[in-house]
Image (tube, rainbow, N blue to C red; front, side, top):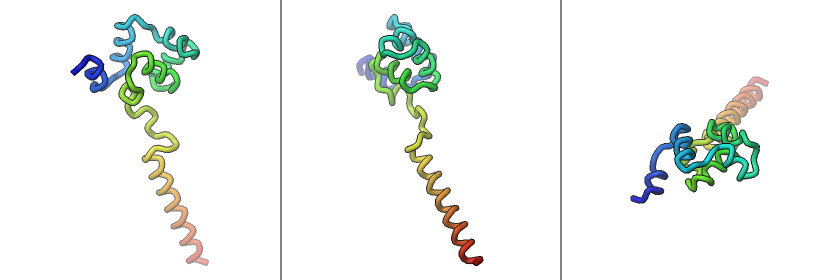
Length: 104
């Protein structure tokens, strides 16, 4: 297994990501500036508050975004969890409408 395959297979936390950035002689501000972002974008990205910063970190390290930040914002607008929530809400609304119609 090559070194890059080992890196891709492991679970990354923010401390390991920062250590890898430092090991390669990079800085979060430098990565952000190279990506054309605000200097603080990668600092926020590593804390999972700025997706563009997180993408810039993944690109700079050459590790796929999904591998470096698994489950990043998993409850977005199109996630399975959110879709099932929408289905439950729609079902409840239909139940309420049916009850109202039956009562009338």
